[in-house]
Length: 125
Image 1 (cartoon, rainbow, N blue to C red):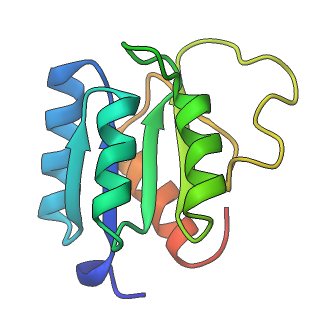
Image 2 (tube, rainbow, N blue to C red):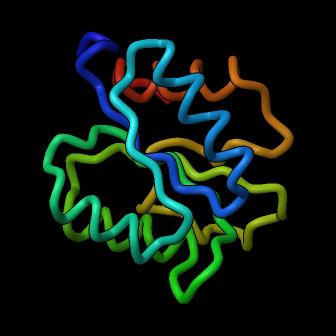
């Protein structure tokens, strides 16, 4: 899928980081939507059938964690590729069957994000 047609939903409760990653991906030709919490992200996924990648922090404000959002997305929109990011150690096996790639560890660079997303679009991890 050409990058200029791929879309990414960036879900991050740290506003500055969310804006930075969304702007970076937009400059790279992605169509970007963003959300500060899982509940709003789920609503976006419900209304926008053209999201290709869910890029989501594991720890989110609100009642829905990033892993909860990933599981919801997998159940309701199995075509969406899922990449979580975290600065914390995740419980062993918690992402099994839900994620399309191992979590991206914080701190990460913009190039790390771009590489991982391009790999997901290309079918690799």
